Length: 319
Image (cartoon, rainbow, N blue to C red; front, side):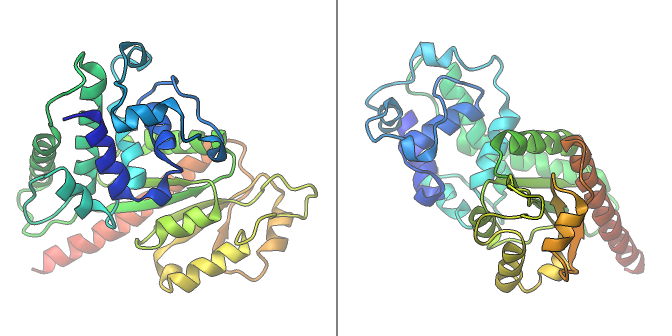
């Protein structure tokens, strides 16, 4: 497989609206792998003649100098999380077909993302420009491992359910967003009873787009937006209360399915002024640390899991 084919398969399958252009895609892909060779720019500055384009279309290889900027070993879990941000139920079939991944009765998005991460690492660690296509083989291995893990949990169960939870994060400050995402990944990586997908967003429009076709268990929304006055809790359209109203309009079941945490650097009085009357929103007190917010969300997901697994146990006992 050539790197240009790998890039095209992901870029075309995921959809061009997710990336500014080819240069943007290569830049954030390298960053996900731990390389700082290409500096991430404001989206409007990605030029059509950037060097990343040449890597994307195969006119230039990934040089050994570039490969040397990646850590050794590369953190495959960070790559996995990167792909998981963009690959979901809306594009999984396109990915499967493009890379000719052999599947059985179902498609597992997480297994796809792990196989893509493995393929990218092979490109970076190999001295050759062309490498073996391991995507389908790794996918099969991941599926087998997942199946064996499920079976080993409780061989006596005649019915088994895997709990997966979706969390959407929103913060316009990229550094803070990355810190919150990293804190949550650290907490949930050690969790073996259920799996969590985390979707970081930097705009309310992105929140709407990413949660449009899936159930979200927790929204973590930052409503501070650097206000000039304490009582100004929003500056952008479709933010704060507008975002809440748009979400419940597009997803009527959100009052049942989801719980909102409002993460704000503002005093509680200012937040209440903005969300007065919105009783489905859980207002959190001002947090002194991002780690505390991550633990709060983890505790809530634990409660969800205990409640759902308890219900399953009751059902099984009646069979």
